[in-house]
Amino acid sequence: MSGNTSSNAGYLTPLTSPTTQVGIEDALHDIVCGITGLGATLVRPRWQPEPPKQPERAVNWCSIGILDRQPQGFPAVTHDGTGRGKDTVTTWETLDVIASFYGPNGQDLAALLRDGLYVEQNRVGLRAAGLALGEVGRMTNVPELINGTWVPRVDLALVIRSEARREFGVLNIVCGPAVIETDTGLIAQTAPMN
Image (cartoon, rainbow, N blue to C red; front, side, top):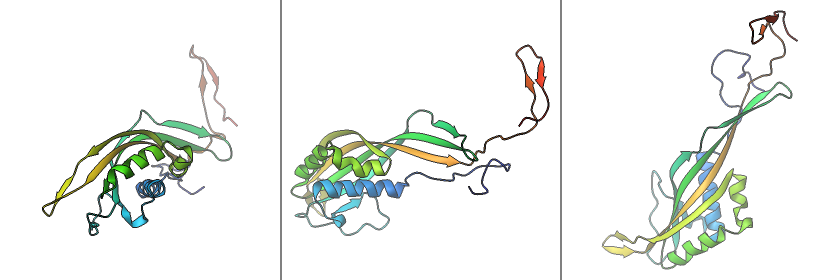
């Protein structure tokens, strides 16, 4: 365990961290590629600092991105009293994801992803990243007018659940001065406790 523990005053930073935003996006990329059969370069992050050239109108491809992240309730904090001790903070989030399919087979690819997500084996990659399928929403036709030409596009809404665990170096109390006071105000012990 690093020096970042409760043995020192001040803020604690996590000793371990969950899957990052990039890791979540990579897991979503991989599941779309795996289920639809689209090549890795044809499944792209929705928002990029320097977007690559859009494929031709006759090419099938997908753009995927996280629209919203909402926390679900209060996190659970559990203490592991074995060894030196640690606290694990577990949080849950709901991710609203949009997968936009372009090209002549966009509708079919969106339907393929929708149906493929219900197959247990296809969700293994999500679970490895701490993710789970919440629900698959509707497919919506939203063609885009690009350079004076209508380009077919189908949006598929997904709800993904995320579980994140972070460990903090909250050590066990081994001994120290303490006062035990009963409900009636009687002091039961003032000596150091071991």
